[in-house]
Structures are given as structure tokens and as C-alpha cells.
Image 1 (tube, rainbow, N blue to C red):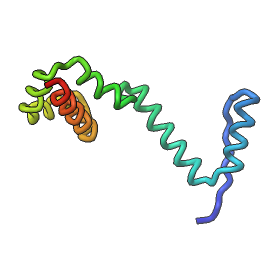
Image 2 (cartoon, rainbow, N blue to C red; image 1 turned 180 degrees about the vertical axis):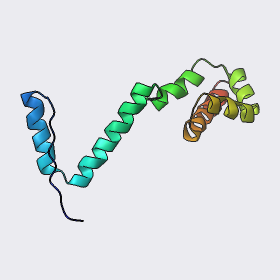
Image 3 (cartoon, rainbow, N blue to C red; image 1 turned 45 degrees about the vertical axis):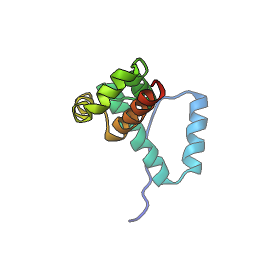
Length: 110
């Protein structure tokens, strides 16, 4: 596909203008598009209210106040807990990290 020139207007400060010019002159078009896609997806997630940054804080929120008996109960009823976590919107890797932390809590406080 032949290369195509693209021009756009955006109101930014002088400092931002220099930074943007540096990025546009030093990065290949594929990397610029990749970054714009990432920024756009993150912006839409944040403005839509479903961006959940800080996976560690979600794990801590679910586990840091539990005692050993509560952690054991959750581990014994793990299938129910998976359903509960999925309803909250947690991903399977995050659920796996929660389980690992629950195992640590249950084992450490015997």
C-alpha cells in the first residue's frame, strides 16, 4: 500500500507541541497507531466506568481482612466464589491470584 500524508489540527501548548513532534519524528507509524489505539481504549474504558486499574488492590480488597477460618471456607466453596467473582467482573487470572492469596492466609494463620 502506498504511503499517504496525513495532517491534523489539535490545540496544545508549546511544550506539548515539541513532545508530539519528537514522537512523530522518531517513532514508526505502526508504533504511533498502537499507542493511539491503547490510549483510545483506555479512555473509553475510563469514561465508560469499567476501567479497573490496580489488580493488586482488587486482590487485597478481597483478602486482607479475612481470618484463617473465612479463607478456608472460601477455598472449600471455591466454585461458588468463582461465580461470585465473575459476577463482580473479575478476570480468571485475577481470581487465580485471589485463590493464591486465600491459600496463604489459610496456611499462615494455623
